[in-house]
Structure formats: structure tokens, C-alpha cells
Image 1 (cartoon, helix red, strand yellow):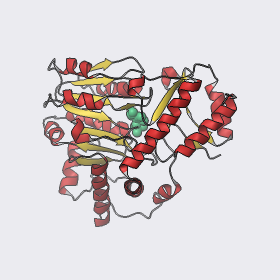
Image 2: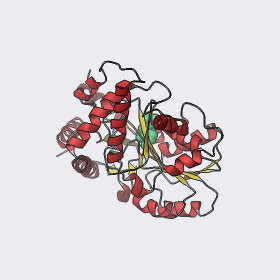
Image 3: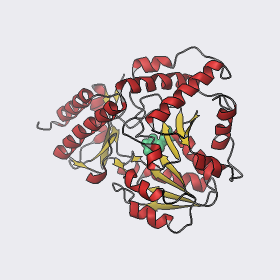
Image 4: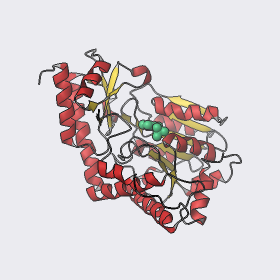
Length: 358
Ligand SMILES: *Cc1c(COP(=O)(O)O)cnc(C)c1O
């Protein structure tokens, strides 16, 4: 049975966007393919307020995270984590034999400017990774504050995971001092999974040139040089189907207007937060709440799986807590193309199923 997804990826995809995936194939060495890829890059630069080059990868976001670490760490990486996805960077570093240190905060908390300053001041690191929006905890890092530290370390390549926030909240990549900003299609951008996008700054390009073994498929310097020399084409065959849908969806996003889109996300978030405070509790530190996903502490000790089963019968799906937070929390994603009305409908059903007083 068809369910409307309120999980933090993959998200509900508009049918006209889905249909773009069924466009007839074109040769990936054609002028049309170049034009398609260039249109996507131009729109992503607007969405991210960036002058950096845009790279597309036929992989999920994790592919570009691994590619960034591997392509741009010459000495040692500082991995700042506030949850499961932050820690993923560290696992990638370990598995690729990249020297790295992990700096974690408790789940529900954010990485502070002070913490980052202290670590970078050691001078031990030439790359750092930060999660913008921690999907496992519903925390959004204070990246504007962090930017004031990052800009004092010109030798550090700054990588930011915005997989669950790009498209749902403002991210001004250049202002934030980010070199490699990474996202996936299947979250706030409102597309099917299978493609990832990142920025690649001059600093990142120069660094990658000093790293001898960058792998092959996810060698970001190779991708960059290829699109530069071959008119925006990629070394291996990309998912053109995703590109059609991405080009179309970015056009829809521009038509909605960035401000309007981000405001809609904020409104949806505010509704879910108010509801969660009333009937349960928010898991995340109130100062750093995510605009795209809310983690709710299960103070009533409800059976989350049973709630989801019953929601499923009504055509809805939410998410249990992530990993160790399963059943202790549950999550409602308010990202992509959902509306304030959709969120109201979902909460109405949850309230009805749990017999919560209005
Ligand atoms: C979903 C998610 C990822 C993983 O992205 P994939 O596209 O599934 O590889 C990484 N980081 C965050 C914050 C996420 O929400």
C-alpha cells in the first residue's frame, strides 16, 4: 500500500518529479548531457550561494563524504560528531587508513565553536568534517558561529554534511567558509535516492593535487578536471534519469522561491515542535533544533512500531529513533515538498491513534 513518508529519507516525491525519471535516454557524451549537467550546477550554485564548482556523483551522499575525506586529507582529519552520521565520517577515515581523530558530543547536543577552536588550534589537522543537520538526533549545528573559527584556519579543508538540510534551510556555503558541502537527492531536495552533489572549492582542488592516492571512482579531483576539460561531462556513465528529475525539481524549487521554501520548512518544524512539547518532549537541545527533522523523546513509553503499523493502515509512515535511540525516541521528518496541511493531517492521525486529548 502507498504510504506518505514522513521519514528522514527517502522522502515523498511529487509524481511529476518521479515521472522525469522516465525520460528517454540520451548519450552521456552528447551536447544535451553537457547542457543538462551545466543547468544543474548553475541552479545548485544559487541554492548554496556559492562560487565554488559543483560536482555530481552517481552514489548516495556517503559516497561523496568518503571521496572528500580521501581526496583532500594530506595529513590528518578532525572529525566533529554529534550523532550517528557524524561518526560515519570517522568510520570512513579508519576504513581508508586516513589518519583522523574523533571529537564527539553527547547525542542531542551540538558541536560548539569553542570545541572546534580548541581542536584546530593544535595545528594537527588539515581537514575537518562537520554535520550540519544530525538526522539521528534532530540537532542543527550553529554553523554561523563555527564559520568565525573556520575562517581562521586557511590550511584546513572544511567539509560539511548537509545531506538532510540542503533544500530545507538556508546554507550559504561561501559565507560559512565551507569548501566541500555535500548533499543527497533523497532528503530535503525531494527526489529519489541515487545521486549526490557537492561543492569543490579552490582550496580543496589545490589540496587534492597534493594527495597521492585518492582512489578512482570518488576521486573528486578527477571529477573536477573532467567536467572542466570535457564540458561538464563525467568520467563514468552518470544516472541521467536522476539528472532529469534533479534539473526539474531545482526549477520547481526556484519557482517556489528559496525564502518561501525555507519558511515553509520552518513553519512545519514549529508545528511539530509545539506538538512534541505538549504531548512528549524534544530530544534535542532547544537552542539547536533542526528545521527538517524532529526527534521526540518517548516520554509516554508508547509502542513506536505499533504506532507506525497503525499509521501505515492510514497511509502514513514516520521513523523510529535511530540506532541506540530506537523506541526511546521517534522522529518526524518535515522536509521536501510536504506542506503545513500535510503535517497537520499526520499529527491528527497520531493523536487519534494514541487517543491524546486535543
Ligand atoms: C541520510 C544521511 C546521510 C547518509 O546519506 P546517504 O545519501 O544515505 O549516503 C549522511 N548524513 C546525514 C546527516 C544524513 O541524514
